[in-house]
Length: 217
Image 1 (cartoon, rainbow, N blue to C red):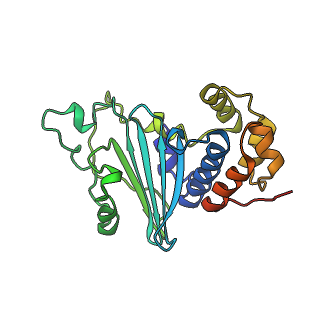
Image 2: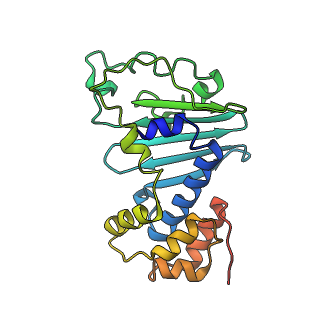
């Protein structure tokens, strides 16, 4: 399962942040409308905190919070039987947030993060070598949506290209996508190759605001 991969530390907090940055950069290039994008990253306050979101537009989300103290990841599959909406008492599944550090729980009080909308949660504090989870006891037949949603983060360039071509109805260059996945600084030529109709100046402005490494040549 995808969650097992995260818990086994095959995906580190920094690796997760790097992945969200590149996916958000690709979305900036491929979509002119922020509200239509699947991947979003933003720096909060003085820059010590970073917030990421995956939103498939169908009610399923992942919210990620990076602070100097660690990272928290909260996922919500609206069709999961683990969802509060599927429970008679409309409560977060017992144990979901057990053990989450107080400062992370305080951050989740932000209404935009919809703390009650959760079907899986994991976190790592600075110095941790593995992802942690609360004391949840979910029936084996119940799907918490982790594999489905984390599968939107743990993707190959080929998988991303296939998804993006379907989502944006564009012919997506696998070569350019692979370069971005490999950390090659984005150029104006790469932007135009991915989306010939994109306003390059506007895309560069947004990419710089995100903090993406650029090579304007």
